[in-house]
Amino acid sequence: MNQKVVLITGCSSGIGLALAVHIAKDEKKRFMVYATMRNLSKAEPLVEAAGRTLGRTLEIKQLDVCDEASIKACVDSLPERRVDILISNAGMGLIGPIECQSIEEMKSVMDTNFFGLVRLLKEILPDMKRRKKGHIVVISSVMGIQGILFNDIYAASKFALEGFCESLAIQALRFGLNISLIEPGPVITEFERKVYDEGLKIDLSKADKVTADMFTNVYLKNYKQIFETLGQTPEDVAEHTLKIIIMDNPPFRHQTNTLYTPMTTLKYADPNGDLPIETFYKMVFEHDKVFTASLNFIKLLHWRSRKSFKLEKSN
Ligand SMILES: NC(=O)C1=CN([C@@H]2O[C@H](COP(=O)(O)OP(=O)(O)OC[C@H]3O[C@@H](n4cnc5c(N)ncnc54)[C@H](OP(=O)(O)O)[C@@H]3O)[C@@H](O)[C@H]2O)C=CC1
Ligand SMILES: CC1=C(/C=C/C(C)=C/C=C/C(C)=C/C=O)C(C)(C)CCC1
Image (cartoon, rainbow, N blue to C red; front, side):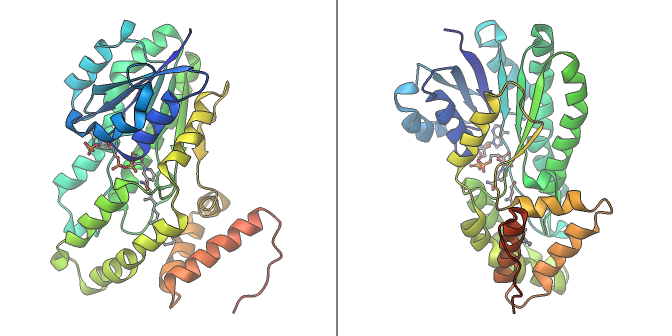
């Protein structure tokens, strides 16, 4: 059986866990999945979800994307060091006003979300080039295309990924390699809970009153509802990703959340870049019921983009 070797990072929870299980459970058994995590003591949920695939089409290994030695040890442990499909998923979020965040916290986000991929590729890309075969799949975000209020550093880390991959994709083509950026909108995982809980703990004393109020009473206040209304499941993202890895000519970018695409489209619709910024500003600040108005707007754009909605005046 000619199985493709898939290496996935950050499989202790969320999207990584769902990806590992979904790909390992492929009915045609087309893949051998190495599901990695930095801390093997967190393997229990994956072991449980993997069920009978464990030891068959799924194996669990240690890998910390911030530790070059652990990446090398993991790749060295694979038969012939072969990775056909790398899914770079490990990542972390960070929200809040920058004046309340330390440079250390910010560096940790860049180190995980951006340099994590760079470290992986320094180890894996030369082998892929030699074999002239390979697919690099990066779990980016809609925030790799577009910034969102109080996500300045997180969005920067995802923009960095996108710039890096866009540059590398040209070189990769010369070797017959593919690169794909998966761009989910909000996904209901541990990420959401961790980011929200950390957000609640932020010491806002270094921020002025307007900023502190904006963060607490606009952003945090609506945060959970945004995930409840727009959020996808990690399984849904895994299904999208499986479709991408089985394609002969996979796309460079793929957004997984159709409810969100009208917002990212605003970016492409205006080369000056003002349209998304002004729209988000209006969504947040020029309505009493911020969230309801924002969601109505998203739905409106969604319907319009499908050309099946006759615009009606709302009050
Ligand atoms: N949830 C969302 O709304 C969205 C998430 N994404 C992206 O999806 C990816 C997965 O996030 P998600 O599943 O939601 O969140 P989770 O918090 O559930 O999962 C994050 C995973 O990354 C791991 N991780 C963190 N740091 C490292 C590291 N140094 N080395 C190896 N693994 C590490 C975590 O391990 P540990 O348990 O040890 O901390 C965990 O397994 C991230 O890149 C995120 O940016 C993109 C769009 C939306
Ligand atoms: C504030 C705000 C919004 C919030 C979006 C959020 C919170 C998106 C989160 C995405 C995540 C978590 C991606 C992870 O990579 C909307 C709905 C665009 C409307 C305009 C104002």
